[in-house]
Length: 340
Image (cartoon, rainbow, N blue to C red; front, top):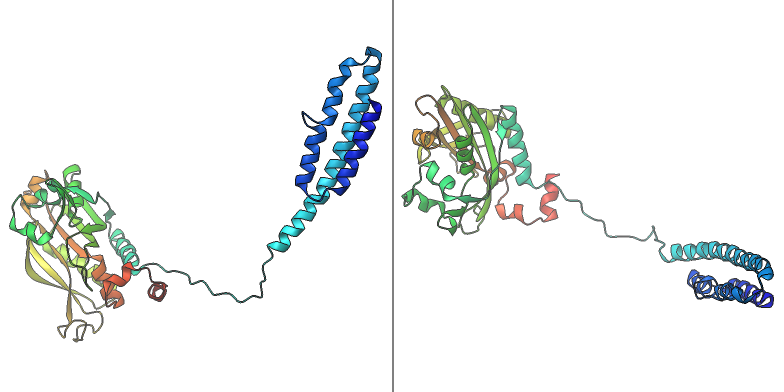
């Protein structure tokens, strides 16, 4: 048995010296020190020895194991360092090699405008609220004075999921939800994505974005609406830009108005952008219809309010003089790089 131990030790140390990688070392460790290894086989055979010889033989086995393990660890350290160097050589990067530069993106002008509008109205004391894009007909139409079969529904070009569920056609249902769950005073803006069955072209899309505002309190007047929108226009487009109201009709406001802004390109002198008029139509607004207040559980004899809504794509087109709104959806880095 002593001779076997000596042979195992010499053979293992010789194979260790010849091992060229850590995989070969692991194979050698298993064959010598593993559960079915040569050294383990000798330990199992010690039961056949006389009792007085077992301590000496056990000590010899342990010394052989310790010598082989020490040699294994030393050789493993050498091979690990060697393999590391070889891997680094394979993975080396030639920093002098010319590469194609990567273009960095930039914020989409649509969301830049939305963030700017939010900042403007939050600065005026408004709260930002959001609501579901898949909406009940009750909130999208009925509470906004658009009952079933109302002719004004035709202008919405609605995507119906079923008779009572739609993809919201405006962010106004967020206002309806707020009016039915809160008591005045209310001062909110509602940015979000909306859906209408429009043909896609340079100024229309079946999916677009709006921001609407709502104020309800005692003594709110059309003058408050005019002052709010004048302040918004001056903050967004610069001093000297004001609003002009033209009579219009919306079922949820009475009176209603189409709101024009002084053309930011020519400052009212007349140009190609405003078709020589000096004004550009931007949004719709008006005083909240008393019927809407009553349907939402707000006393129309005590409270009044105003509402306004604008398309964010249209604001971005005007602010940045973008010729086609589809450019804002394509993620073309050449386009976005202009807005860094």
